[in-house]
Length: 227
Ligand SMILES: [Ca+2]
Ligand SMILES: [Ca+2]
Image (tube, rainbow, N blue to C red; front, side, top):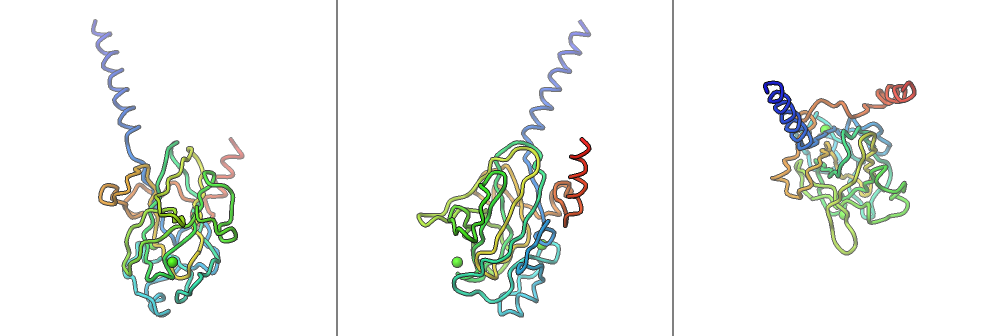
């Protein structure tokens, strides 16, 4: 009788634990300046460098730095360079990505975004496929904006079905001077910022998932090879 009670309690405990674990939201955060690859003319910068180009001086970026294609905004956009984050997705799910951004005018408020393996292998700077166009919310101070899809017929929030394992988030220059401080990845698909409460990289769990500057890329490749 005692043994049976114990087994029942154990079973209830395990089921509860499983339920709690599966309900915990996934939260990942990465500094733009720590992206796995930053391809010129995108560069890491500090606020005074933006001001020197005639732009705003967006103070206190997370980690002290951000990434942009420098220069005053021009009509038509630069369409050169990108930053890529190689991240480890902890579990199968559907994810949204938020960026902490500054976009100072109508000629500096967009990127292209592709996420592999969810999106097709395509270079949107060449194809100008609006499916991958992110209309970045304007503002001269750091603010969160969920990555969207700016189609000619309207703007819609994007989400990606991703399996546990490696994913590559590539944020490509569309218009010069759009600034990215950091990104926040979550399986909370609410479009309401007050509900999602995007966090800075320093506020989420330690960065076990990013391959900083290619350092861990080798390790990961080795791990795969030895498995
Ligand atoms: Ca624009
Ligand atoms: Ca930053």
